[in-house]
Length: 291
Image (cartoon, rainbow, N blue to C red; front, side, top):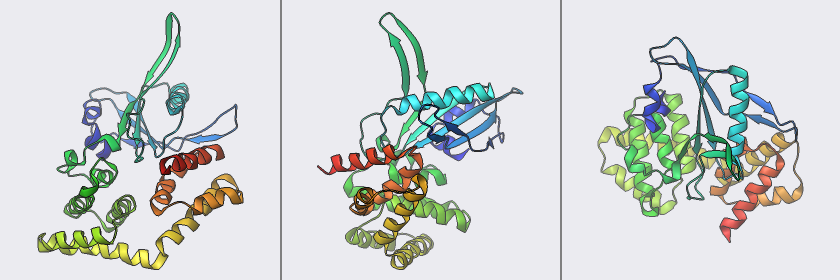
């Protein structure tokens, strides 16, 4: 329940303690296009004080998508028809741009009547202030802070605080590697910033400095071994080809032209793509941001 406690503690008012059960992956087929759509996460929880259950549907949206709110309604309708229990829908918008507030409602209206109003809980990370999560003793907060709103000159401080929080949580090595990898991928510092981070670390207490330096050293070793940008290009192209069977040379060249940061964003977004058109739209958005 860590993510719920970190971002929206009011959900816990309804949930019986230790009643969370993750359900098997849900895959729906769009009958009009034949595209398969996967739900990111579906969990069953028990109502507090009652002998009945409801579902929490969580979607991570890593890129800006037209009419996403309609897709959320389609998910809701199909889950409702299948399970016949209340559903609490949640979306985490994890992209960097745009920063305008995202929709959290899908409606169908006629001139004199509203036929449908469907609402879901929207969490837009790039509109959340990272400082508000500094005192959250939670690994999810440590990871998500890297995608929240902060000034360019705060990049080093944010990364340091993410790492400091991570080493104080006393997690097992596997969890530390997973979360630290997320932090490094989405908040990668340049050479000058890395030097500033090292200076800041020397001012930390000895135990913290040693633990954080172990994490930073592992990042450096992996970067040297893989040849970061080339390695990411190969991995992303392989994922795209497996996702859509194949891609033409034009799309492959567009992926080759992406910056390291854009490649990292694509790695996150690719699992939200339902068809090749989604990939093309995403690449078009990157072109627009670069204008």
